[in-house]
Amino acid sequence: SQQGEEDPQALSIQEGENATMNCSYKTSINNLQWYRQNSGRGLVHLILIRSNEREKHSGRLRVTLDTSKKSSSLLITASRAADTASYFCATAPTSGTYKYIFGTGTRLKVLA
Amino acid sequence: EAQVTQNPRYLITVTGKKLTVTCSQNMNHEYMSWYRQDPGLGLRQIYYSMNVEVTDKGDVPEGYKVSRKEKRNFPLILESPSPNQTSLYFCASSYSTPGTGGSYNSPLHFGNGTRLTVT
Image 1 (cartoon, chains in turn blue, purple):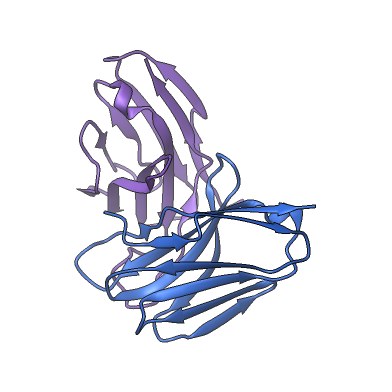
Image 2 (cartoon, rainbow over the protein chains, first blue to last red):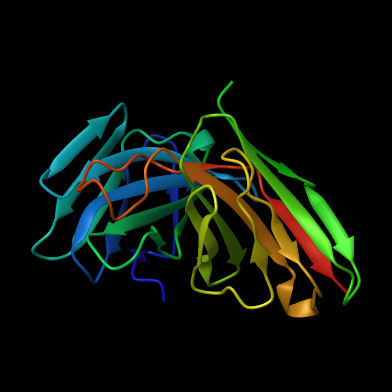
C-alpha cells in the first residue's frame, strides 16, 4: 500500500508564484525524497532529506521535514513554465522493507 | 553518461504472448527495482533485487517474473500477459538498498519507461 499522500492532488499557478506541495507518511523513515516526472517520462530525483534534518535547500527548491507530524513539504520558488510536472514524495522506511514507498503525486501546472 | 536504459519504449501485444522488458544500468548499482504506474494509483513496486541472484516480491508481483544474473541487467518477464497488465512500467536503480545503511540511502535513477498495452 502507498504510505505517501501528497496534497494537493493538483495545483495551478501563474509563472513567478511559489508552489507548495505537502506529503504525509505513516511509518518511521530513514529519509524522504522528492522526485519530478514530466508527462509519461521517468522520475527524476530532486532532493533527499534525512530523518535527522529539518530543512534543505537546492536552488529554487526548499524541503522541510517534520518527523513528529510525519510530514514534508516541497516549496518551489519563482516557478517557471518548465516546472510543470508531477511531483512525488518517496519514503525509505527504517525497517521491514527494502523499498521506497511513493505517494500518488501532485500535478503542478505553471501558466505562462 | 550514467543512465538506466529500458527497452522497448512502447509495446503492444496480445493476451498470452510472452514478453520481456529489458533494463540495464551502467552505474554499478546494487539495487534495482521495477514499478508500474497507473492513473490514481501512483507507483507500485513489482519486484526488486538487492544484488546478483537476490530478488524479492514487491507489492504487485502476480503475473511477473524477474531475474538478476548480472549486476547491470534486471529484465521483467510477463509469461502470459493479460489486459490488466496494461500500464506504464519503470525500472530504477540505486547504489544502496533502501532500508539499509541508516539515513544514508542514495536516490533512485529511473529509466524512461515502457508503455505496455495488452489487448
